[in-house]
Amino acid sequence: IRPGGASEVDHAFLEARELSAPAHDDEALFRAQRGLWLQSLQRGVTAETRQHAQANMQVAARIGTRPVIGEASRCLAMALWLQGHLQAARNHMDYAIACMPAAYFLEHKGVHDPAWGSDCMNASSLIYWQLGYPDEALRRSIEGLDVNRALQLPLASAVALEFVSLVYAMLDQPINAGKAADELIAVSRKYGFLTHVELGRMLKGWALAARGFARKGIP
Image (cartoon, rainbow, N blue to C red):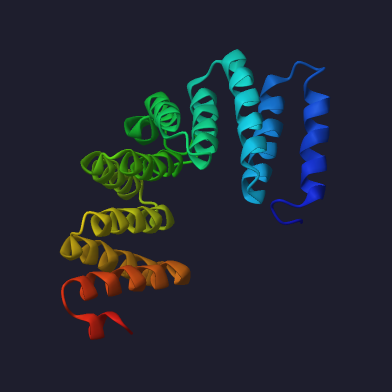
């Protein structure tokens, strides 16, 4: 087992791509290209990340199914976002969400990665925030959380609560930020997500300090 970003993993995905293309196995080619996209993403090589994502959009178009097109759009949106192309990132992320909206996951439980939709909503909320749409950013972060609650996904719910609390903090709403942080801490402690407990404590500390309780906000 090698960590993400390791050169050996790159070689494995490159070999898979070379074997898939001549065989016209687009589904295998898509998986190989997505693996290379993820490798580049983990290394922070944004230009290469975008190239892999754009190549996979062409493969996804040939496959033609909603989940594959949605995933390809999400990957390209992430690459564009990292390069600062916010409008284009928003368009592709919105298209990804339209391919597989929240209702799709509720209707197809166990078929696709159930946290996929909320991951899109989390990223989308930050894109909209950066574009200057704070209300839409909040709406999307809350919608992502609602999907995870409906699907009973504790880890994905913890991640979504971080985004909700963060957006409330950026909106300078410490009471709501603190409530989301409290729920994050409770969920994370219940399921043993220790990293998320600490993130929740950080967000709770900010909320307390913003309300004038600085000493309480510092554990």
